[in-house]
Amino acid sequence: MKLKQLSVFLENKPGQLLLPCKALSDAGVNIHTLCLADTQQFGILRLVVEDWKAAKEILEQNGCVVKLTDVVAIEVEDRPGGLARIIDILDKGRVNIEYMYAFTFGRNNRAVLIFRFDDPDSAVELLDSEGIGIVGAPDFFKLAGNGK
Amino acid sequence: MKNALDEDAVRNNSASAMDFLPVPQLRALQLGRLRGIVERAYERVPLFRKRLDEARLKPGDLDSLGAISRLPFTVKADLRDTYPFGLFASPMKDIVRLHASSGTTGKPIVVAYTREDIGVWSNVMMRSLISCGLHQGDIIHNAYGYGLFTGGLGMHYGAEALGATVIPVSGGNTERQIMILKDFGVTAISCTPSYFLHLVERASELGLDMKKLPLRAGVFGAEPWTEEMRRHIEACTSLKAYDIYGLSEIVGPGVAIECCCQDGLHIFEDAFYPEIIDPETGEVLPDGAEGELVLTTLCKNAMPMIRYRTRDITSLIAEPCGCGRTIRRMRRISRRSDDMFIIRGVNVFPSQIETALLSARGTLPHYLIVLTREKGLDNMEIQVEVTPEVFGDTIGALEKLKKHLMASLERVLNIRADVRLVAPRTIKRSEGKVKRLVDLRNASK
Image (tube, rainbow over all chains, first blue to last red; front, side, top):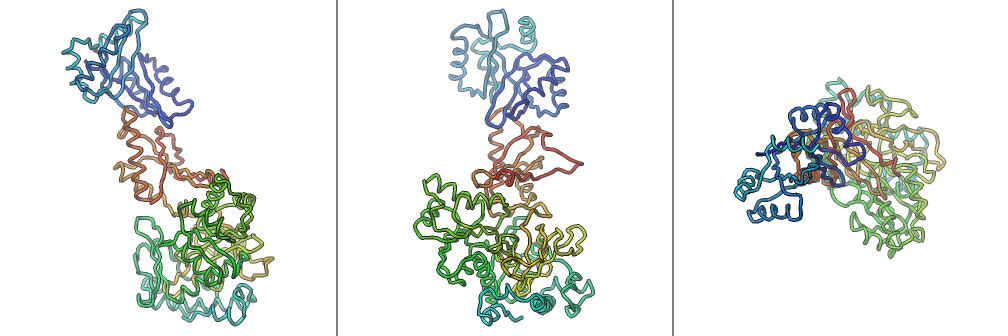
């Protein structure tokens, strides 16, 4: 039910984002989705790719510090209120969100939310019990593939 | 051993007479004192006796000043290894003062003074102030720290010996310092040059033009500084800026100071015998050659230092000075032969930073110390490479790591250091050895 996300440490200065992106591109790894968190001095690049093992190895060979994290992907309708409903459930269930990001896959009218929870297992349980559709890896990459 | 400094000064009816002795007379005086101090150290300090015995030497073998090169060196580690009182040559009942300075491993280095030693120190400090054109009637704002650090009290006693009015301001509280400078008719100030630049900057922010103050002299030391800084200081104030040199192991401030010519620092040779050596081979180099400064205290009773390796790199100038002093000069300290550096008057060894990083994370990351100077204030930034063991995927985790490292550094160093997390392998390695220190302070003014 959970997805593997790769986080890469970056210094906040010009040219830093290029190294991991180029390394993956040279190895033919497609980045399905990403998000960049930044502070004044440093940032964290978060990536979801299909073959995370290969991607992690490539990044590490290129000198990146990589952290593997479990994240939860949820598919929602791409319309007002789609996100709010999920957040409301999590809030009521007192589940803490470390961070999240969202994106849409091209032509289908659906959006995918990626959540990083302190405790992903209990979050999955809660969302499941509320009938929220959690996207597992096979579906996620099928969706991503369709969107291309 | 007899301390003749004050008597000589009185006999010549000039407080600075020892600075102007004919050279042969000075050398004879030095040789006599050297024999006395070596004998004292041999008789009273076990470490020194052992070293001399090992070298099959007796104090009586010193038949000329040149023979000093046969004596063993003393190094900072000797003070650490004999912590706290192992190198004292006087019983505690004769010791009237202790000071301490930062060591390499958390334990300070302890130094001692008899009443006579305090007299010698006050005398060389008084002559230092005379060398800066100061006299009775001057009002001296002493912003060196009072306490274990030798700077504050050393300057204080010299100013009192001179008969000047000394204001023991000590460090900190910049606004109050500016008020005193403005309201007390201060004519001279003593502090670290970087702190003075900070005072100038802050005064200007508060709308005070330092040029309008009656300041005539600034006695700046306890950290290395440059000609560029001198020009800058003299351009935005009315004072002449003088470089003063000293170190706790020898006496504190007052080992050497510039005169009105501002061209090299006169070493008070009647009290401190200087040599320049090749830091690699230990071989004595001739006057004019650059190398490591080695000092021998000629009249220090409580803690004689024989051929103490200062690690400061300079050269000696034997040519006569325009001021007429016959005591030799040394060039401004350009750098050190070890990796110690001084920031805001505090001695810091990279090994202390390693200790702090190790205690914070359990493993030693690659790191780089970057020193910069901004608006006259020295800043220290420790760049630390992020490793997989400590990297988290949230900003909060990284901020926490950074705070944790900063707290650990401050605990060990007693001064604040910024931490910058950097990507792995960004700190340059050359031939397996990492350059630990980048000092940009002189580059940035």
